[in-house]
Length: 483
Image (cartoon, rainbow, N blue to C red; front, side, top):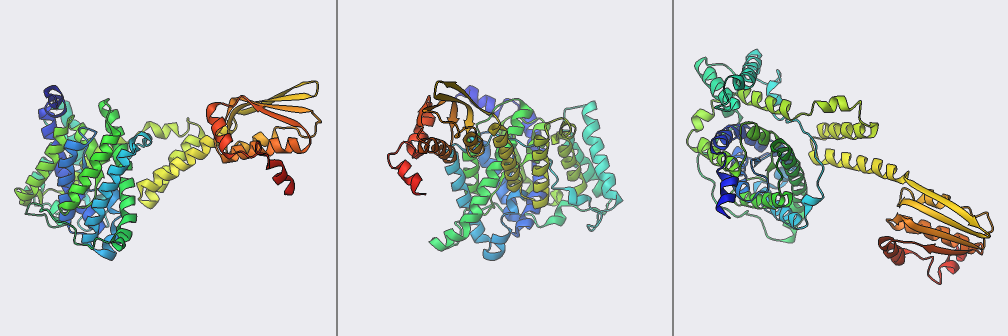
């Protein structure tokens, strides 16, 4: 790597990247522990995964300043596997997840995932639930104080990231005043040793593959979906571009490393990535710092980290939620076409109801595709002109499974013409249904004794018609008459 590129990607923003990495490392700890508990594994599994993934992705990822670690979206997909087969099968699944993601990167998956959804990070909101033990008015007061620090401090100075100040100040207040609030240590035991290399203790046979493959495929898809969406958000925030296919490959490599060091599969984190950028990060160094500092906090400063009050981290996540939510989208629901607004609503409702990002985006993409197909199907026009006993039809537009019926119904078979010309110069046939509609029209005319000439097909249309059509086959009319 040329020195100029090394400088730009790693050392062009030293102070901002180091401070931002520290903030993110603090925010990663409770998230990794919580997601480990969701998956049903020891907190060490999520914490080791977060360290491994953050460090590896800093070198091999395609989006500088983006944070990847153990995530809730991935943890939810692991629950059944861990319950039925245990940790070792989860580690094997993590390895396979990485392999699948690398294969997807070779297939240029980044080129076909160019949709972006503004997300709101709500993972910490249970910490504001009064039904949870030790959540009281003190918790709300501390969150309010934390938000005041986060939003007011930048008006006085931007020398230090306000989220970092928020965490430090509230930790000191909670310790000095001995406040009865939930702390990071309440979530689970922190590891006190370095992760070690280990190969999953599972049989290397077909039965094992049958067990882990469905979960691995789900993890690979959800992980890439969230990672590429996060990359696009960071692209927009920093007004820079990133290599989505390199990011997909990097996610795969990072997950393989995580699985070999006792960690669960992970992906990019929207909330932590936004914290990172808003705290001043711009290069790969911030991601590396986040991973390294995370391990240092666990191994060296564990007793102090355990004292961090959860309200401090809630305040940081609320700041992220406010910052990442597109408030204009609420107004746009009443301005944009109803189809666009409906896609937005369906996507959000599905994600919230199922807690599955992939299902929500899938539902939104499916609905958007149906609306698009319906719109394109309406953009088809068929006109005709008569000369003596010859009728010439001119087709304009896209003919596929939605518009095929419109195409078929546009021809008048009741007139007695010696010849019919179908001009497809300004049309495009896309699928088997469209070709079938053309067959139907041509053969129906020929059955009535009318000569038919199809002309003007572009190369793509001619290829699919030549391959799938039957009207130009000698036995086509006989076969039609048999039916």
